Length: 187
Image 1 (cartoon, rainbow, N blue to C red):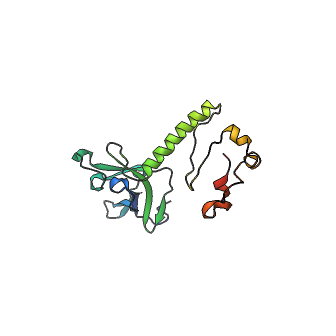
Image 2: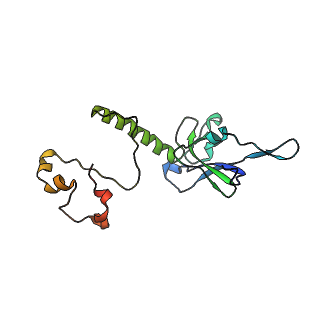
Image 3: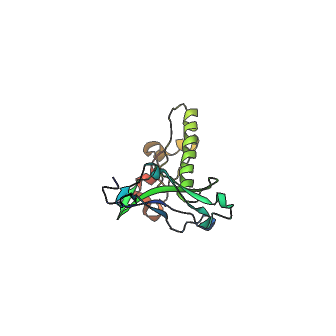
């Protein structure tokens, strides 16, 4: 696919954390050619499936990499299966996670995926306790979502909650959110 789109380079693309875990809006890239010169001097395609899965770069050069022994200073890029690859110009961009030798997250995506896995594990346990069976729970990340638990006694006094499944009476929504049905949806 990438070859048919003219890719001659590949890069494991990631979003490194800055010092103290603060996002700086940077991206990190490790570029590699996807071909070598053959014995006769002709170009030979040398990109294999394993090249998609992982790569290595010097993790000690990142601000949160810290001072480590040389043999543990490597940063490792691993394919991010939750994000699609793309070709821009002559380069195949491979979204990756970036972790240290010890597994510490050196990027923005690894903590997010770990948190999503924790939510899934806890969600499956909760649903099992409530009598439901599922293999996983997939959290959707996007606009702010707030959920309020209303005691039964208070719920019974609110006709709007009983009939509409959401708050209808009360103060007007701030910042024009009154038309944001996703913001006011029932759980």
